Image 1 (cartoon, helix red, strand yellow):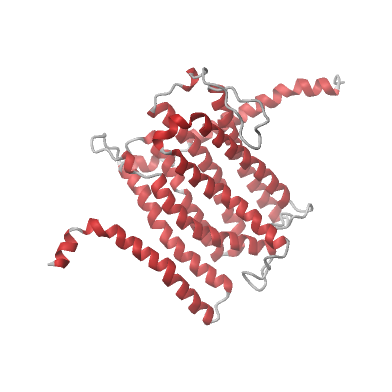
Image 2 (tube, rainbow, N blue to C red):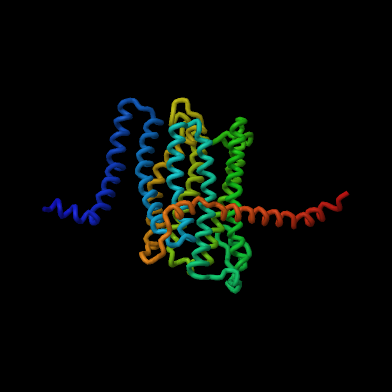
Length: 370
């Protein structure tokens, strides 16, 4: 009788049971197996590969479940298309890093996928916020020129306030889109210089391209993140209904923390605080940097999957009265990148026009051309 009662009310305890099983695997099973591997003489890289693989297996069901729920309850395509693209970040990151641990020699090539997707996620989050303001709140931003100027925040609080309205929105968009362009370019440069032996991952030597690429990516990421924060500051009242803080923190933590984590690991290896033999006896600085970064990301993506599950929940979009959209159409919609290519093209034209407008000033200072 109690058994049949439990079965008939499985929805009341199934979530707790799954959460408990997840907790046992993470806190008990993984450490025990890792200790057994160590006692049997397994190397550090094998232990890291196994442990990270377990976390990947725990991560993927959470994210895929949430993606499927959005596809099944695809009631607001203008928002959910971008949410699904953001949710894909977690499985792409975790699988990418675990495959890099499986085949370390391909790590730098696999990382290009992750690094390019970073820029894609930042873009989609900005469009998600804009669509919420324009479609959900029916704000006509082009007619919103009466908004007060937006004061800069630390460390740029000494700059003059940004004019509100359409000009401010355009500045934020281009501040984010520049990262969408720069990140793939620096990734391609890293690949090219690696082929010629001049990348030097983890080496802060001016004879290699690594320190220059780190500086460029750092500046570009700062501009993109600053643009997002400034946009939130200007429209935080209007964005309150969609609970923006957890979403901001998820994006910031995954995209930007992973980059700075890589830089910190490189500095620890460069200063000798972490030995190059940390992951393998014949490991180089670049191998340890990439391997340790990939191992940590596999673990962190489990936490990110749980955070994304709540921050980008499908629950607000469940509407039994909404007109159903076929699952195939909702699934294919997230692969349509025509909006991205259009916005990137507009950004490149914008930068080109800005550069062209500076030419008369440059020529004027340089004197008349002969």
